[in-house]
Image (cartoon, rainbow, N blue to C red; front, side, top):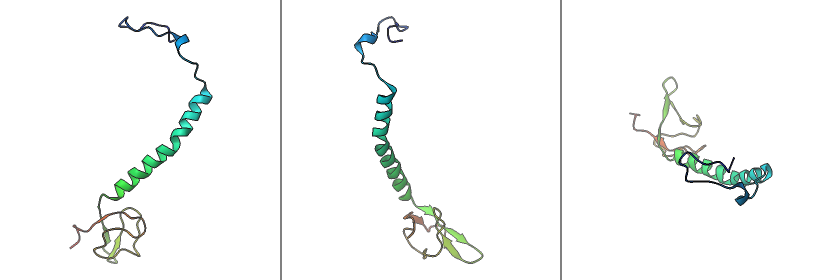
Length: 95
């Protein structure tokens, strides 16, 4: 209830001063933020791809695998990025 006093006794809010907010208004505002949320998630995903991950080597066949998507057909020794997903690759553990 907006008309109650808080524990410090200083602030009193009057409900008549604030316009009523309907669920429809709240839902509309949430929908307006969905594109921004998706953009932030995409930026985070791209940021994570810039952090080099150690390459996975299959000891049995001697093939390299991307640690993110598992691609093994297009990974060549020394590649900086995976051709399939764009993940930065770290070859420091390979001798």
